[in-house]
Length: 163
Image (tube, rainbow, N blue to C red; front, side):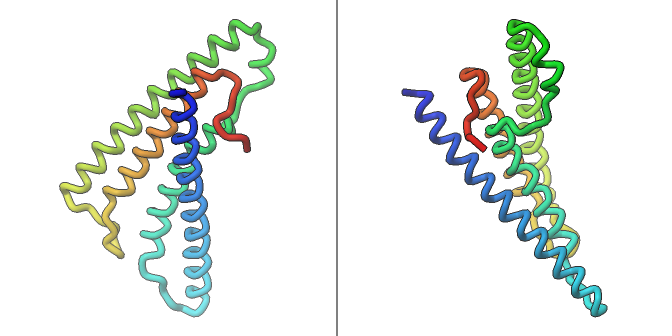
């Protein structure tokens, strides 16, 4: 019962983060295209660099939970499949635990650094967009990567989301 609810909540939030990532990518493409067209007419798009930085950070971070959920990361399957089953289980468990540790550190440091940026009132150069919420959003995405990896640890061989 617990895992059903866990799976449902995590899956929905992972889909929401994937939608955020897609939206950020579309906006990033639009900002870049508008900037290129305006430069052809010797006009400027003030803040294009700021928007590209913010949207790029959000796009990549928000896509990580979905990529992890569908097991879309690069794997060394050729060598991995040649190992005996026990070794595959051992290495798979170790890499998932290391991934959880890595993303736990990334999430923690994203929240810490975001809080520092908030207290220092750090903003983007041109548009004065606060940076703290970008780091906090990245931290939330990293937390959901951890939750997806926990699901994979407890349900070996099963994807959280089918691609």
